[in-house]
Length: 253
Length: 229
Image (cartoon, rainbow over all chains, first blue to last red; front, side, top):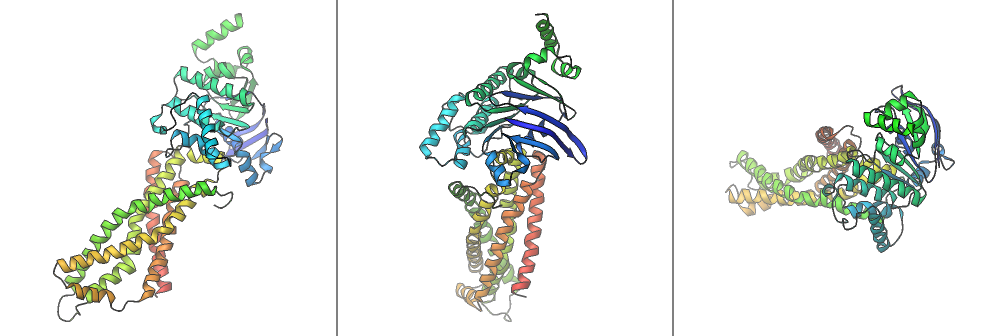
């Protein structure tokens, strides 16, 4: 579980996060949504320790991120899997080497076992027989799958995904979303997804956090989002005609 | 750089790869440049020291001194700042732009240790490259001198052996080690701390080349003043 208390962050005296408090539960897929510039990437980077926050607390299973030494932070990070927006695969390594990378860095297990684990994870993301391909030879969807495989190969406790389906066609995007949800349940991990894709919200949003101007404007589940009267949320989520109709139909039901 | 260092098995592979990228892959260009510039230095020296006033061995002597003291350690390092320095800046810079460094950081990997330290170690082999540059520079000078008809081979070899001061080799290799460190760290700094996109990677490479050259030239002056002055 990750608990955030009154998180504040400014850049050049310009506040970006204005006191966010929330909780992310284990075994659930939580989504952070909001318009561009709402602070969701900064929020995610603060949780990941890529940005140092000014005030507040981030508790990873009751341990405060700020009270950890650099070495403790590095150990915590080895329990975090991250899927970046652009996949961030290492160009100089093939798919197999990319997925094996966290194992090589943190596990003292024989090479055969590492290969078995990599093959198992690649099979889980439906990428068997692509081991020797270079990232540049893989499609956007494949790259995302490799990034997911690399993030979960070490069996992390926490999974962070920054817009995991950006740049993907709707069908592949849903496949990726469902894959993340299934993995979260299988491994019983805390998953946080940064997204502004409404398909993701409707598909896998067990917990949704809506950020607006650096503040937590609304939180709930995908069921609650149909019923909410919060204007900022409805403006953002139901901005397209299609979603407006879907919402009307849902409420009529 | 040394907090939570990378596992030795991984570091070993990185050092070997960086040795190939920075030292082994530079052998061709360094050999080519050294041989022909050595030849040009000799021709120019021969043309400006004609006449009975100058001893016959002078061309060989002056070629050796020029190549060992300045050309091989300093000029080759400036060429390397262009070749290896911009490679280091652009490869680390591209990793920064495509969030690969962030990926290392969030995995709990000390990214400076992972990216920079192997380059520093790989470039410890740089003096080997400079030794080849010295040898080929003098060889190129000898070929140009003998086949160009400026002097005989025995006069040239006499010149190479005349008044040889072993400390000059020590001085040249001290410079080389310092330049190797500069070649590994200054471009890495520019790549690691760059901000922006693909265009900025190109700009960072240019800036890194300029600063690497400036640093090499300043240290060249300081070391020369300290050791020979």
